[in-house]
Length: 144
Image 1: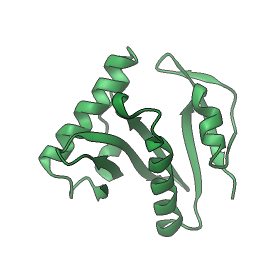
Image 2: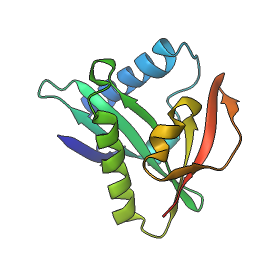
Image 3: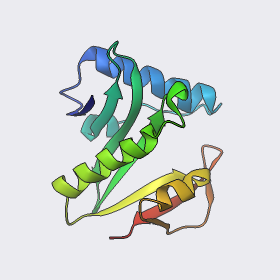
Image 4: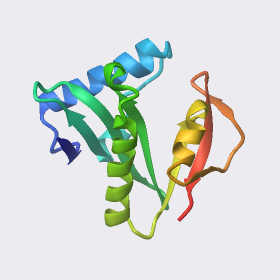
């Protein structure tokens, strides 16, 4: 089941499983020591799916910042990759953004190797490739 909650609506158990999976993927798996938990968590919408045992399968956060909407911290549990769950997550996020923020542009900082994936949803590059925490990234904007 997909869930969308503000930070205040998250239970402590939900917050724990979200942070645990983010650290597992972004810091341990990608071997990238950086400050994953940040102030944006406090004002973001948290979009996630768990299985019947409460295991986190996929997660992302929607950020209303400046004149654009952003989303990030997109993860799919390692065991779920290649199942279409990433596309499902992006569809849920973009549908929610379209309903809640219909007039706002959507901009993301994508890991460069995912450019084609995000491109399949209508995102186009708006920057050159750059390093963010030693990982190649590219800024992308959703074309409506």
